[in-house]
Image (cartoon, rainbow, N blue to C red; front, side, top):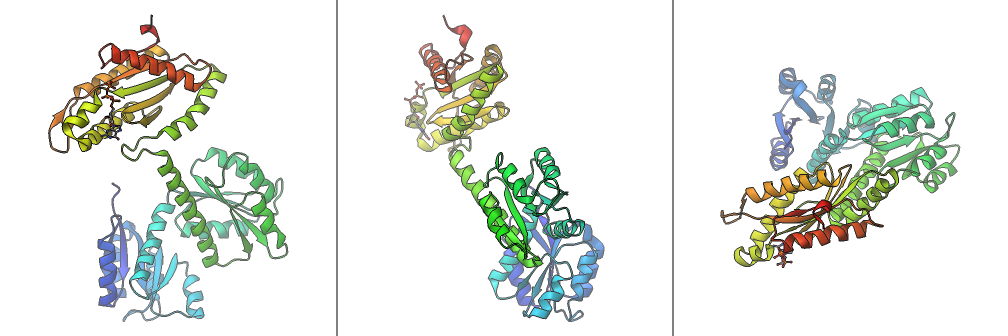
Length: 422
Ligand SMILES: Nc1nc2c(ncn2[C@@H]2O[C@H](COP(=O)(O)OP(=O)(O)OP(=O)(O)O)[C@@H](O)[C@H]2O)c(=O)[nH]1
């Protein structure tokens, strides 16, 4: 697991500090160091500013009554979330202008959880790249700065053509913010081009439209943008919109992941296998690349359940799936259902594929599975491997399944390939 991110909490109220401490102590990703005054905050910053990931800072401290601590923390280069006891427009404008990440009005436990949520958002934003597309230097620099403040990796392009090049070269881009008026390709054309390849659920696009052209926002959305922002926008509006879009993208990814993963073993499931497998099969047919299909089944698995119980059976399935997953990590591997697994190995001829599966067979058979009871149990599998593409993936797998059946007939713990067929 990744090391915990260390945050600085500056708060003079013992009660608030206690609540924050409670929330942080229950968090698996964060740890905190506490200061009750500006002086204490200075000492901590002098000693460990470089190790601090972010800070939560109270605006009102006995030795710093007017938010001075925020400037000190920001000067030390630590992203800051402000905790404020009261809210008014003037104060809001003043603190946002300092360049903070966000501010939270102290209104009970939920607001501290929200503040820590903002810190965690900063952590996850670090692995997200955002592409800003705008021909105006001022606007591009401003938007890039707002995004950096939220922890994102930021890339920038001056027009649509440059943007597409950057997008194709950079897998980590999950969000694009694009202006409309640009030379070479306008923002809406850019969106249309991007949507040929990238789905809305894989890549968020936010279009920017000026006040003089209110119809642009709808034009952006109708052509595939996820959202739009009217210029000029303020920092909070911008960050809320970006955050909401990134969070829904993550939710969709989680749903997809859940729909494609086998719950028990964590391996890909049948649905994922066939979606990816059909494309792989077509590619191999078109490019005349060899493709080995493998069907693999645990031997006498019913007896494991009968003798040791269903929980032990589940443990065996998980352990063997893990071993297979590691051995086949370069390839498409899935649990087809029950005690049956399938794999597609592009680029391997039948001898290579059969010997790889045989090595895995030996490995699985030679290492006992430790059951929840502590007992050790030896299990094995049989497999069929064919490179005969036949006329469809289904038929290729059916042939591998036929070999598997023969392996079972021949005594189990055996791999049968094309050359083993008479
Ligand atoms: N524990 C557990 N058992 C499962 C799961 N899915 C399927 N099974 C069991 O797997 C067993 C498969 O048994 P059979 O199809 O008779 O095959 P086998 O005993 O492995 O025999 P051979 O394949 O001929 O070597 C059945 O008892 C199923 O109940 C699961 O998710 N967990």
